[in-house]
Length: 204
Image 1 (cartoon, one colour):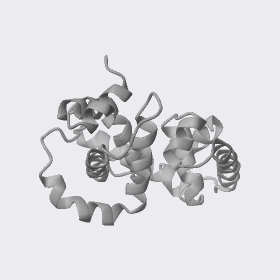
Image 2: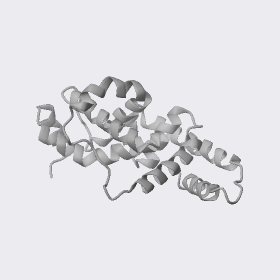
Image 3: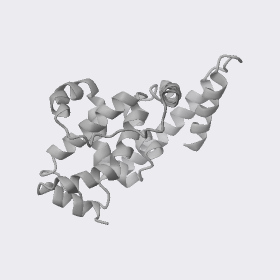
Image 4: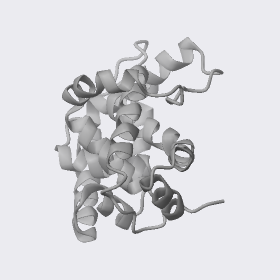
């Protein structure tokens, strides 16, 4: 199996097959990252396409210096997410010309499951979105996408020490928010949500 460095080098020379291999390798990771930041399956699909379109356009100017291309791809995803509406509008025509390789979720996922996933993710984001943008980004990369400090530093373009301090701050702030979260009333479906949120806070 070719390494990311080998695939990226070939893609930079114009190999669509090599770039497709990188897409197959990391599309789900990018897709999940976008979904966790938007709680919208459809938006995550569009944003994933935009991320890889940007990666294809910049393949000749960017060099992957580490073993994995994922940190850089998630860095592109963060930029796209920050400018979500502008990015989608600017790339709409280009997206329509993309080959049929665009990411599609598992067909086994039914509509009910997708809607339930969105509902749960919105509940989590309602709390996480109360954190500053920098804290949200490092939390998404290190906790949800499970990048190392070094990989997150590549994605964010900041020193490793900054990643560590931001994550520590995010954990502390999220813990405070969880403790201040009002106790839900029985019978309104909030018990399961809050339980999931508190569990997520413990995992941090």
